[in-house]
Image (cartoon, rainbow, N blue to C red; front, side):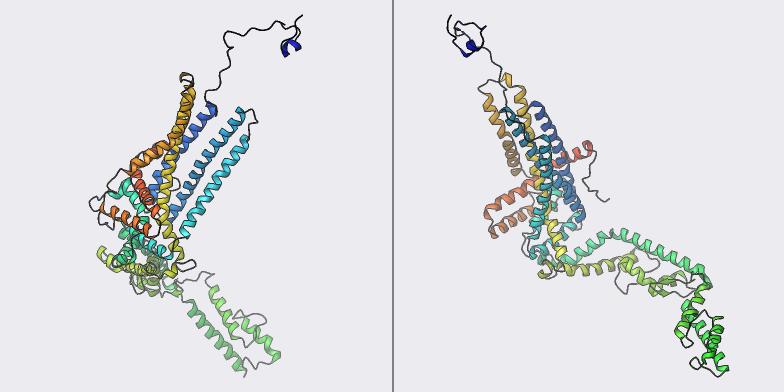
Length: 564
Protein backbone atom coordinates (compact mmCIF):
# COMPACT_ATOMS: atom_id res chain seq x y z
CA UNK A 1 0.00 0.00 0.00
CA UNK A 2 1.34 3.38 -0.91
CA UNK A 3 1.89 6.05 1.74
CA UNK A 4 -0.58 8.92 2.09
CA UNK A 5 0.53 11.82 0.02
CA UNK A 6 -1.67 14.50 1.57
CA UNK A 7 -3.20 15.36 4.93
CA UNK A 8 -6.58 14.64 3.37
CA UNK A 9 -5.37 11.10 2.43
CA UNK A 10 -4.24 10.49 6.01
CA UNK A 11 -7.42 11.70 7.63
CA UNK A 12 -9.90 10.20 5.17
CA UNK A 13 -9.27 6.47 4.71
CA UNK A 14 -11.73 6.18 1.87
CA UNK A 15 -9.94 8.69 -0.22
CA UNK A 16 -7.83 7.67 -3.18
CA UNK A 17 -4.17 7.07 -2.37
CA UNK A 18 -2.94 7.71 -5.89
CA UNK A 19 -1.15 10.99 -6.43
CA UNK A 20 -3.37 13.58 -8.18
CA UNK A 21 -2.25 14.84 -11.50
CA UNK A 22 -2.13 18.62 -12.09
CA UNK A 23 -5.28 19.74 -13.95
CA UNK A 24 -4.78 21.19 -17.36
CA UNK A 25 -7.15 24.10 -16.55
CA UNK A 26 -7.61 25.79 -13.16
CA UNK A 27 -10.76 25.07 -11.26
CA UNK A 28 -13.34 27.87 -11.50
CA UNK A 29 -13.43 30.16 -8.49
CA UNK A 30 -16.22 32.32 -7.13
CA UNK A 31 -16.04 35.80 -8.67
CA UNK A 32 -14.85 38.57 -6.33
CA UNK A 33 -17.12 41.55 -5.76
CA UNK A 34 -16.20 44.03 -8.51
CA UNK A 35 -16.64 47.09 -6.22
CA UNK A 36 -15.97 46.26 -2.59
CA UNK A 37 -17.68 48.67 -0.20
CA UNK A 38 -21.24 49.79 0.28
CA UNK A 39 -23.97 47.50 -0.97
CA UNK A 40 -26.24 48.50 -3.83
CA UNK A 41 -29.18 48.94 -1.47
CA UNK A 42 -27.12 51.22 0.81
CA UNK A 43 -25.97 53.29 -2.16
CA UNK A 44 -29.54 53.74 -3.33
CA UNK A 45 -30.60 54.81 0.17
CA UNK A 46 -27.79 57.38 0.38
CA UNK A 47 -28.68 58.71 -3.06
CA UNK A 48 -32.31 59.18 -2.06
CA UNK A 49 -31.36 60.90 1.22
CA UNK A 50 -28.89 63.20 -0.53
CA UNK A 51 -31.41 64.09 -3.24
CA UNK A 52 -34.07 64.83 -0.62
CA UNK A 53 -31.67 67.03 1.35
CA UNK A 54 -30.59 68.81 -1.83
CA UNK A 55 -34.22 69.60 -2.71
CA UNK A 56 -34.78 71.24 0.68
CA UNK A 57 -31.43 73.05 0.54
CA UNK A 58 -32.19 74.58 -2.85
CA UNK A 59 -35.70 75.57 -1.73
CA UNK A 60 -34.22 77.11 1.41
CA UNK A 61 -31.72 79.02 -0.70
CA UNK A 62 -34.57 80.66 -2.60
CA UNK A 63 -36.42 81.55 0.60
CA UNK A 64 -33.24 82.90 2.16
CA UNK A 65 -32.78 85.26 -0.79
CA UNK A 66 -36.35 86.51 -0.31
CA UNK A 67 -35.59 87.25 3.34
CA UNK A 68 -32.20 88.92 3.12
CA UNK A 69 -32.94 90.74 -0.13
CA UNK A 70 -36.46 91.82 0.76
CA UNK A 71 -36.03 94.12 3.72
CA UNK A 72 -37.11 91.54 6.28
CA UNK A 73 -37.04 92.37 9.98
CA UNK A 74 -34.49 91.08 12.46
CA UNK A 75 -37.09 88.56 13.68
CA UNK A 76 -37.58 87.25 10.14
CA UNK A 77 -33.83 86.75 9.72
CA UNK A 78 -33.61 85.08 13.13
CA UNK A 79 -36.40 82.61 12.34
CA UNK A 80 -34.98 81.56 9.00
CA UNK A 81 -31.52 81.27 10.56
CA UNK A 82 -32.92 78.43 12.66
CA UNK A 83 -33.91 76.52 9.51
CA UNK A 84 -30.52 77.26 7.96
CA UNK A 85 -28.54 75.92 10.90
CA UNK A 86 -30.73 72.83 11.01
CA UNK A 87 -30.16 72.13 7.30
CA UNK A 88 -26.42 72.61 7.74
CA UNK A 89 -26.45 70.10 10.58
CA UNK A 90 -28.31 67.59 8.41
CA UNK A 91 -25.82 68.15 5.58
CA UNK A 92 -22.85 67.28 7.80
CA UNK A 93 -24.78 64.38 9.35
CA UNK A 94 -25.27 62.86 5.88
CA UNK A 95 -21.50 62.95 5.33
CA UNK A 96 -20.97 61.34 8.73
CA UNK A 97 -23.58 58.69 7.92
CA UNK A 98 -21.87 57.76 4.67
CA UNK A 99 -18.49 57.58 6.38
CA UNK A 100 -19.76 55.33 9.19
CA UNK A 101 -21.58 53.02 6.77
CA UNK A 102 -18.43 52.74 4.66
CA UNK A 103 -16.43 51.88 7.78
CA UNK A 104 -18.95 49.16 8.70
CA UNK A 105 -18.79 47.68 5.20
CA UNK A 106 -14.99 47.59 5.27
CA UNK A 107 -14.99 45.75 8.61
CA UNK A 108 -17.46 43.19 7.27
CA UNK A 109 -15.30 42.65 4.17
CA UNK A 110 -12.31 41.95 6.42
CA UNK A 111 -14.31 39.39 8.38
CA UNK A 112 -14.77 41.52 11.47
CA UNK A 113 -17.87 42.49 13.42
CA UNK A 114 -20.18 45.04 11.80
CA UNK A 115 -19.49 47.94 14.12
CA UNK A 116 -20.58 50.49 15.07
CA UNK A 117 -24.12 49.24 15.47
CA UNK A 118 -26.85 51.06 13.53
CA UNK A 119 -28.25 52.51 16.75
CA UNK A 120 -24.86 54.08 17.47
CA UNK A 121 -24.64 55.35 13.88
CA UNK A 122 -28.00 57.09 14.17
CA UNK A 123 -27.08 58.51 17.57
CA UNK A 124 -23.83 59.94 16.19
CA UNK A 125 -25.71 61.49 13.27
CA UNK A 126 -28.18 63.10 15.67
CA UNK A 127 -25.35 64.46 17.79
CA UNK A 128 -23.75 65.82 14.62
CA UNK A 129 -26.90 67.75 13.73
CA UNK A 130 -27.06 69.28 17.21
CA UNK A 131 -23.34 70.02 17.32
CA UNK A 132 -23.30 71.78 13.96
CA UNK A 133 -26.45 73.72 14.85
CA UNK A 134 -24.93 75.05 18.07
CA UNK A 135 -21.51 75.50 16.51
CA UNK A 136 -22.83 77.70 13.71
CA UNK A 137 -24.74 79.78 16.22
CA UNK A 138 -21.60 80.32 18.26
CA UNK A 139 -19.59 81.09 15.12
CA UNK A 140 -21.99 83.74 13.87
CA UNK A 141 -22.36 85.27 17.34
CA UNK A 142 -18.59 85.39 17.64
CA UNK A 143 -18.14 87.10 14.27
CA UNK A 144 -20.78 89.69 15.11
CA UNK A 145 -19.45 90.35 18.61
CA UNK A 146 -15.89 90.78 17.34
CA UNK A 147 -16.71 93.78 15.15
CA UNK A 148 -15.52 97.18 16.33
CA UNK A 149 -17.75 99.94 17.68
CA UNK A 150 -17.04 101.93 14.51
CA UNK A 151 -18.28 99.03 12.38
CA UNK A 152 -21.43 98.73 14.52
CA UNK A 153 -22.35 102.39 14.05
CA UNK A 154 -21.54 102.23 10.35
CA UNK A 155 -23.66 99.09 9.99
CA UNK A 156 -26.58 100.95 11.55
CA UNK A 157 -26.29 103.64 8.88
CA UNK A 158 -25.84 101.08 6.10
CA UNK A 159 -28.96 99.14 7.02
CA UNK A 160 -30.86 102.44 6.91
CA UNK A 161 -29.77 102.92 3.28
CA UNK A 162 -30.50 99.28 2.47
CA UNK A 163 -34.06 99.58 3.79
CA UNK A 164 -34.57 102.75 1.75
CA UNK A 165 -33.42 100.90 -1.37
CA UNK A 166 -35.79 98.02 -0.66
CA UNK A 167 -38.69 100.44 -0.16
CA UNK A 168 -37.87 102.21 -3.42
CA UNK A 169 -37.17 105.51 -1.66
CA UNK A 170 -33.54 105.72 -2.80
CA UNK A 171 -32.02 105.27 -6.26
CA UNK A 172 -28.37 104.34 -6.16
CA UNK A 173 -26.06 106.18 -8.52
CA UNK A 174 -24.67 103.69 -11.02
CA UNK A 175 -27.82 101.55 -11.07
CA UNK A 176 -30.43 104.03 -12.28
CA UNK A 177 -30.79 102.35 -15.65
CA UNK A 178 -32.84 99.38 -14.38
CA UNK A 179 -35.89 100.35 -12.33
CA UNK A 180 -37.03 96.75 -11.77
CA UNK A 181 -33.63 95.40 -10.78
CA UNK A 182 -34.33 94.90 -7.07
CA UNK A 183 -37.39 92.76 -7.76
CA UNK A 184 -35.25 90.26 -9.69
CA UNK A 185 -33.00 87.57 -8.14
CA UNK A 186 -29.73 89.31 -8.99
CA UNK A 187 -31.04 92.54 -7.45
CA UNK A 188 -32.07 90.73 -4.28
CA UNK A 189 -28.64 89.13 -4.11
CA UNK A 190 -27.03 92.57 -4.41
CA UNK A 191 -29.22 93.93 -1.60
CA UNK A 192 -28.11 91.02 0.58
CA UNK A 193 -24.45 91.75 -0.17
CA UNK A 194 -24.78 95.54 -0.05
CA UNK A 195 -24.23 96.02 3.72
CA UNK A 196 -21.06 93.92 3.77
CA UNK A 197 -19.68 95.68 0.68
CA UNK A 198 -20.70 99.20 1.76
CA UNK A 199 -18.97 98.71 5.12
CA UNK A 200 -15.68 99.24 3.27
CA UNK A 201 -16.65 102.80 2.27
CA UNK A 202 -14.64 105.23 4.37
CA UNK A 203 -16.61 107.78 6.46
CA UNK A 204 -19.91 106.58 5.07
CA UNK A 205 -21.95 108.11 7.90
CA UNK A 206 -20.48 111.55 7.14
CA UNK A 207 -21.12 111.20 3.41
CA UNK A 208 -24.82 110.51 3.93
CA UNK A 209 -25.27 113.07 6.74
CA UNK A 210 -27.14 115.56 4.54
CA UNK A 211 -29.74 112.95 3.58
CA UNK A 212 -29.86 111.00 6.82
CA UNK A 213 -32.76 112.82 8.48
CA UNK A 214 -34.85 112.48 5.32
CA UNK A 215 -34.02 108.78 5.06
CA UNK A 216 -34.98 108.22 8.69
CA UNK A 217 -38.22 110.19 8.28
CA UNK A 218 -39.14 108.14 5.22
CA UNK A 219 -38.28 104.95 7.06
CA UNK A 220 -40.53 106.01 9.94
CA UNK A 221 -43.32 106.70 7.47
CA UNK A 222 -42.82 103.29 5.87
CA UNK A 223 -43.00 101.60 9.27
CA UNK A 224 -46.31 103.41 9.87
CA UNK A 225 -47.66 101.99 6.61
CA UNK A 226 -47.20 105.17 4.62
CA UNK A 227 -49.69 108.01 4.70
CA UNK A 228 -52.58 105.62 4.06
CA UNK A 229 -51.56 103.26 6.85
CA UNK A 230 -51.12 106.20 9.23
CA UNK A 231 -54.54 107.54 8.20
CA UNK A 232 -56.06 104.21 9.17
CA UNK A 233 -54.40 104.56 12.57
CA UNK A 234 -55.88 108.06 12.83
CA UNK A 235 -59.35 106.74 11.98
CA UNK A 236 -59.08 104.00 14.59
CA UNK A 237 -58.04 106.54 17.23
CA UNK A 238 -60.90 108.86 16.31
CA UNK A 239 -63.37 105.96 16.36
CA UNK A 240 -62.25 105.28 19.93
CA UNK A 241 -62.80 108.92 20.87
CA UNK A 242 -66.24 108.88 19.22
CA UNK A 243 -67.22 105.85 21.32
CA UNK A 244 -66.01 107.63 24.46
CA UNK A 245 -68.10 110.67 23.54
CA UNK A 246 -71.23 108.55 22.94
CA UNK A 247 -70.85 106.95 26.37
CA UNK A 248 -70.23 110.39 27.85
CA UNK A 249 -73.26 111.97 26.15
CA UNK A 250 -75.60 109.20 27.38
CA UNK A 251 -74.99 110.30 30.97
CA UNK A 252 -76.39 113.77 30.32
CA UNK A 253 -77.21 115.54 33.58
CA UNK A 254 -76.36 112.38 35.49
CA UNK A 255 -72.72 113.10 34.81
CA UNK A 256 -71.83 113.84 38.41
CA UNK A 257 -68.60 115.28 39.74
CA UNK A 258 -68.32 112.78 42.59
CA UNK A 259 -65.41 114.54 44.28
CA UNK A 260 -67.31 117.80 44.32
CA UNK A 261 -70.42 116.04 45.63
CA UNK A 262 -68.42 114.37 48.40
CA UNK A 263 -66.89 117.70 49.40
CA UNK A 264 -70.28 119.31 49.41
CA UNK A 265 -71.94 116.59 51.51
CA UNK A 266 -68.96 116.52 53.88
CA UNK A 267 -69.15 120.23 54.56
CA UNK A 268 -72.90 120.00 55.10
CA UNK A 269 -72.77 116.99 57.45
CA UNK A 270 -69.78 118.31 59.45
CA UNK A 271 -71.38 121.71 59.89
CA UNK A 272 -74.60 120.06 61.07
CA UNK A 273 -72.55 118.01 63.55
CA UNK A 274 -70.79 121.09 64.90
CA UNK A 275 -74.10 122.97 65.05
CA UNK A 276 -75.72 120.21 67.14
CA UNK A 277 -72.79 120.20 69.56
CA UNK A 278 -72.85 124.01 69.77
CA UNK A 279 -76.47 124.00 70.91
CA UNK A 280 -75.18 122.33 74.10
CA UNK A 281 -72.10 124.47 74.35
CA UNK A 282 -69.79 121.63 73.24
CA UNK A 283 -67.11 121.14 70.63
CA UNK A 284 -65.71 117.77 69.43
CA UNK A 285 -62.94 118.11 71.99
CA UNK A 286 -65.13 119.08 74.97
CA UNK A 287 -67.92 116.49 74.85
CA UNK A 288 -68.13 114.91 78.32
CA UNK A 289 -67.11 111.27 78.40
CA UNK A 290 -70.50 110.19 79.70
CA UNK A 291 -72.16 111.62 76.57
CA UNK A 292 -69.70 110.49 73.86
CA UNK A 293 -71.64 107.28 73.14
CA UNK A 294 -74.91 109.20 72.69
CA UNK A 295 -73.25 111.75 70.38
CA UNK A 296 -71.59 109.00 68.34
CA UNK A 297 -74.90 107.14 68.01
CA UNK A 298 -76.61 110.33 66.84
CA UNK A 299 -73.97 110.92 64.18
CA UNK A 300 -74.14 107.30 62.94
CA UNK A 301 -77.85 107.80 62.17
CA UNK A 302 -76.81 110.24 59.41
CA UNK A 303 -73.19 109.34 58.57
CA UNK A 304 -71.85 105.72 58.65
CA UNK A 305 -68.82 106.41 60.86
CA UNK A 306 -67.19 103.44 62.69
CA UNK A 307 -68.69 102.37 66.04
CA UNK A 308 -65.47 103.41 67.80
CA UNK A 309 -65.13 106.68 65.90
CA UNK A 310 -63.23 109.46 67.68
CA UNK A 311 -65.48 112.51 67.83
CA UNK A 312 -62.56 114.72 66.74
CA UNK A 313 -61.53 112.61 63.70
CA UNK A 314 -62.75 114.68 60.74
CA UNK A 315 -60.78 112.57 58.21
CA UNK A 316 -62.68 109.40 59.14
CA UNK A 317 -65.91 111.42 59.09
CA UNK A 318 -65.16 112.57 55.53
CA UNK A 319 -64.31 109.01 54.45
CA UNK A 320 -67.68 107.85 55.76
CA UNK A 321 -69.40 110.62 53.79
CA UNK A 322 -67.46 109.54 50.67
CA UNK A 323 -68.71 105.96 51.06
CA UNK A 324 -72.28 107.14 51.57
CA UNK A 325 -72.22 109.33 48.45
CA UNK A 326 -70.70 106.64 46.23
CA UNK A 327 -73.08 103.99 47.56
CA UNK A 328 -75.93 105.92 45.94
CA UNK A 329 -74.54 104.89 42.54
CA UNK A 330 -74.11 101.21 43.49
CA UNK A 331 -70.45 101.31 42.54
CA UNK A 332 -71.16 102.75 39.04
CA UNK A 333 -70.17 106.38 39.26
CA UNK A 334 -71.78 108.30 36.38
CA UNK A 335 -68.74 110.25 35.26
CA UNK A 336 -66.23 110.18 32.38
CA UNK A 337 -62.52 110.49 33.06
CA UNK A 338 -59.66 110.62 30.57
CA UNK A 339 -56.11 110.29 31.87
CA UNK A 340 -57.49 110.88 35.37
CA UNK A 341 -59.23 114.12 34.44
CA UNK A 342 -63.03 114.40 34.70
CA UNK A 343 -64.79 115.72 31.61
CA UNK A 344 -67.48 118.27 32.48
CA UNK A 345 -70.99 117.41 31.18
CA UNK A 346 -72.65 118.93 28.14
CA UNK A 347 -69.73 119.06 25.68
CA UNK A 348 -70.25 118.57 21.95
CA UNK A 349 -68.21 115.91 20.15
CA UNK A 350 -65.84 118.56 18.80
CA UNK A 351 -65.41 120.13 22.26
CA UNK A 352 -64.97 116.71 23.82
CA UNK A 353 -62.26 115.85 21.25
CA UNK A 354 -60.54 119.18 21.88
CA UNK A 355 -60.37 118.60 25.67
CA UNK A 356 -56.69 118.68 26.78
CA UNK A 357 -56.87 115.18 28.28
CA UNK A 358 -58.38 113.70 25.11
CA UNK A 359 -55.82 115.49 22.96
CA UNK A 360 -52.98 114.14 25.10
CA UNK A 361 -54.38 110.64 24.69
CA UNK A 362 -54.59 111.05 20.92
CA UNK A 363 -51.02 112.36 20.69
CA UNK A 364 -49.76 109.30 22.54
CA UNK A 365 -51.70 106.92 20.29
CA UNK A 366 -50.55 108.62 17.08
CA UNK A 367 -46.97 109.25 18.32
CA UNK A 368 -47.25 112.99 17.72
CA UNK A 369 -45.01 115.66 19.26
CA UNK A 370 -46.23 117.71 22.22
CA UNK A 371 -48.43 120.63 21.29
CA UNK A 372 -49.86 119.05 18.15
CA UNK A 373 -53.61 119.52 17.84
CA UNK A 374 -55.52 116.51 16.53
CA UNK A 375 -58.60 117.65 14.60
CA UNK A 376 -61.90 115.83 14.64
CA UNK A 377 -61.76 115.63 10.83
CA UNK A 378 -59.52 116.95 8.05
CA UNK A 379 -58.87 116.70 4.33
CA UNK A 380 -55.94 114.84 2.73
CA UNK A 381 -53.62 117.84 2.52
CA UNK A 382 -54.48 118.96 6.04
CA UNK A 383 -53.87 115.46 7.36
CA UNK A 384 -50.40 115.35 5.81
CA UNK A 385 -49.49 118.83 7.00
CA UNK A 386 -51.02 118.68 10.50
CA UNK A 387 -50.38 115.06 11.48
CA UNK A 388 -48.36 112.85 9.12
CA UNK A 389 -45.36 115.10 8.50
CA UNK A 390 -45.05 116.26 12.15
CA UNK A 391 -45.15 112.62 13.31
CA UNK A 392 -42.44 111.56 10.84
CA UNK A 393 -40.09 114.42 11.58
CA UNK A 394 -40.50 114.23 15.36
CA UNK A 395 -39.71 110.53 15.42
CA UNK A 396 -36.91 111.02 12.86
CA UNK A 397 -35.19 113.60 15.07
CA UNK A 398 -35.38 111.18 17.98
CA UNK A 399 -33.99 108.32 15.87
CA UNK A 400 -31.25 110.45 14.31
CA UNK A 401 -29.56 110.85 17.67
CA UNK A 402 -28.95 107.09 17.69
CA UNK A 403 -27.35 107.08 14.21
CA UNK A 404 -24.95 109.88 15.18
CA UNK A 405 -24.26 108.71 18.74
CA UNK A 406 -20.65 108.58 20.01
CA UNK A 407 -18.77 105.36 19.33
CA UNK A 408 -18.56 104.62 23.04
CA UNK A 409 -22.33 104.12 23.17
CA UNK A 410 -22.00 101.18 20.74
CA UNK A 411 -19.54 99.32 22.96
CA UNK A 412 -20.77 96.35 24.99
CA UNK A 413 -22.97 97.70 27.78
CA UNK A 414 -23.51 101.03 26.00
CA UNK A 415 -26.91 102.56 25.34
CA UNK A 416 -26.74 101.67 21.64
CA UNK A 417 -24.94 98.33 21.95
CA UNK A 418 -28.03 96.24 21.21
CA UNK A 419 -28.96 98.27 18.11
CA UNK A 420 -25.36 98.16 16.90
CA UNK A 421 -25.17 94.40 17.27
CA UNK A 422 -28.49 93.94 15.46
CA UNK A 423 -27.27 96.11 12.59
CA UNK A 424 -23.95 94.26 12.46
CA UNK A 425 -25.78 90.94 12.29
CA UNK A 426 -27.99 92.31 9.51
CA UNK A 427 -24.89 93.40 7.59
CA UNK A 428 -22.80 90.23 7.97
CA UNK A 429 -25.15 87.28 8.34
CA UNK A 430 -26.95 87.52 4.95
CA UNK A 431 -23.83 87.21 2.73
CA UNK A 432 -22.42 84.51 5.00
CA UNK A 433 -25.69 82.59 4.91
CA UNK A 434 -26.03 82.90 1.15
CA UNK A 435 -22.44 81.79 0.59
CA UNK A 436 -22.79 78.79 2.92
CA UNK A 437 -26.07 77.81 1.30
CA UNK A 438 -24.55 78.03 -2.16
CA UNK A 439 -21.50 76.00 -1.07
CA UNK A 440 -23.72 73.39 0.55
CA UNK A 441 -25.82 73.04 -2.58
CA UNK A 442 -22.76 72.73 -4.83
CA UNK A 443 -21.03 70.29 -2.47
CA UNK A 444 -24.00 67.96 -2.12
CA UNK A 445 -24.74 68.16 -5.83
CA UNK A 446 -21.20 66.86 -6.38
CA UNK A 447 -21.74 64.20 -3.73
CA UNK A 448 -24.98 63.12 -5.41
CA UNK A 449 -23.26 62.83 -8.78
CA UNK A 450 -20.45 60.80 -7.14
CA UNK A 451 -22.93 58.35 -5.59
CA UNK A 452 -24.76 57.99 -8.91
CA UNK A 453 -21.47 57.27 -10.70
CA UNK A 454 -20.56 54.70 -8.07
CA UNK A 455 -23.95 53.00 -8.42
CA UNK A 456 -23.59 52.98 -12.20
CA UNK A 457 -20.15 51.36 -11.93
CA UNK A 458 -21.48 48.70 -9.59
CA UNK A 459 -24.36 47.83 -11.92
CA UNK A 460 -22.12 47.78 -15.01
CA UNK A 461 -19.05 46.22 -13.42
CA UNK A 462 -19.35 42.89 -15.28
CA UNK A 463 -19.22 44.68 -18.64
CA UNK A 464 -16.11 46.72 -17.76
CA UNK A 465 -12.64 45.18 -18.27
CA UNK A 466 -11.01 44.19 -14.99
CA UNK A 467 -7.94 46.30 -15.73
CA UNK A 468 -10.00 49.45 -16.25
CA UNK A 469 -12.38 49.09 -13.31
CA UNK A 470 -9.95 50.09 -10.50
CA UNK A 471 -8.94 53.22 -12.38
CA UNK A 472 -12.58 54.20 -12.82
CA UNK A 473 -13.19 53.71 -9.10
CA UNK A 474 -10.43 56.20 -8.36
CA UNK A 475 -11.54 58.57 -11.11
CA UNK A 476 -15.05 59.04 -9.75
CA UNK A 477 -13.55 60.33 -6.51
CA UNK A 478 -12.56 63.43 -8.46
CA UNK A 479 -16.09 64.02 -9.77
CA UNK A 480 -17.37 66.13 -6.82
CA UNK A 481 -14.29 68.32 -6.81
CA UNK A 482 -14.30 68.73 -10.57
CA UNK A 483 -17.99 69.61 -10.57
CA UNK A 484 -17.62 72.15 -7.75
CA UNK A 485 -14.53 73.71 -9.35
CA UNK A 486 -16.28 73.85 -12.71
CA UNK A 487 -19.39 75.56 -11.34
CA UNK A 488 -17.33 78.02 -9.27
CA UNK A 489 -15.03 78.87 -12.17
CA UNK A 490 -17.97 79.34 -14.52
CA UNK A 491 -19.76 81.69 -12.11
CA UNK A 492 -16.52 83.59 -11.52
CA UNK A 493 -16.31 84.44 -15.22
CA UNK A 494 -19.99 85.28 -15.69
CA UNK A 495 -21.66 88.65 -15.18
CA UNK A 496 -25.15 90.09 -14.87
CA UNK A 497 -26.72 93.54 -14.73
CA UNK A 498 -25.53 93.95 -11.13
CA UNK A 499 -21.88 92.96 -11.48
CA UNK A 500 -21.43 95.12 -14.59
CA UNK A 501 -22.88 98.22 -12.93
CA UNK A 502 -20.66 101.12 -11.99
CA UNK A 503 -21.74 101.03 -8.34
CA UNK A 504 -20.95 97.33 -7.91
CA UNK A 505 -17.53 97.78 -9.48
CA UNK A 506 -16.79 100.69 -7.13
CA UNK A 507 -17.91 98.75 -4.04
CA UNK A 508 -15.89 95.75 -5.14
CA UNK A 509 -12.75 97.86 -5.47
CA UNK A 510 -13.40 99.38 -2.05
CA UNK A 511 -13.80 95.88 -0.62
CA UNK A 512 -10.44 94.79 -2.04
CA UNK A 513 -8.69 97.98 -0.87
CA UNK A 514 -10.18 97.59 2.61
CA UNK A 515 -8.98 93.98 2.83
CA UNK A 516 -5.48 95.06 1.85
CA UNK A 517 -5.43 97.89 4.39
CA UNK A 518 -6.41 95.44 7.11
CA UNK A 519 -3.40 93.24 6.17
CA UNK A 520 -5.55 90.48 4.77
CA UNK A 521 -4.05 90.78 1.27
CA UNK A 522 -3.94 87.01 0.64
CA UNK A 523 -7.68 86.82 1.38
CA UNK A 524 -8.66 89.93 -0.59
CA UNK A 525 -9.05 88.19 -3.99
CA UNK A 526 -10.93 85.32 -2.34
CA UNK A 527 -13.35 87.70 -0.59
CA UNK A 528 -14.02 89.66 -3.78
CA UNK A 529 -14.41 86.44 -5.81
CA UNK A 530 -16.80 84.91 -3.26
CA UNK A 531 -19.04 87.99 -3.35
CA UNK A 532 -19.02 87.89 -7.15
CA UNK A 533 -19.97 84.20 -7.25
CA UNK A 534 -22.83 84.80 -4.82
CA UNK A 535 -24.11 87.80 -6.78
CA UNK A 536 -24.08 85.86 -10.07
CA UNK A 537 -24.96 82.37 -8.83
CA UNK A 538 -28.00 83.44 -6.85
CA UNK A 539 -29.35 85.30 -9.85
CA UNK A 540 -29.24 82.22 -12.05
CA UNK A 541 -30.28 79.64 -9.45
CA UNK A 542 -33.20 81.45 -7.82
CA UNK A 543 -35.91 80.82 -10.47
CA UNK A 544 -35.28 77.05 -10.41
CA UNK A 545 -34.99 76.90 -6.64
CA UNK A 546 -38.18 78.90 -6.16
CA UNK A 547 -40.05 76.69 -8.64
CA UNK A 548 -38.90 73.65 -6.67
CA UNK A 549 -40.03 75.21 -3.36
CA UNK A 550 -43.45 76.29 -4.58
CA UNK A 551 -44.46 73.40 -6.84
CA UNK A 552 -42.70 70.35 -5.39
CA UNK A 553 -42.33 71.15 -1.68
CA UNK A 554 -45.83 72.55 -1.17
CA UNK A 555 -44.61 76.13 -0.77
CA UNK A 556 -42.63 75.43 2.41
CA UNK A 557 -41.94 78.74 4.19
CA UNK A 558 -38.99 77.89 6.49
CA UNK A 559 -40.58 80.17 9.09
CA UNK A 560 -40.78 83.27 6.88
CA UNK A 561 -44.04 84.74 5.58
CA UNK A 562 -43.57 88.06 3.79
CA UNK A 563 -46.00 90.84 4.63
CA UNK A 564 -48.28 91.93 1.85
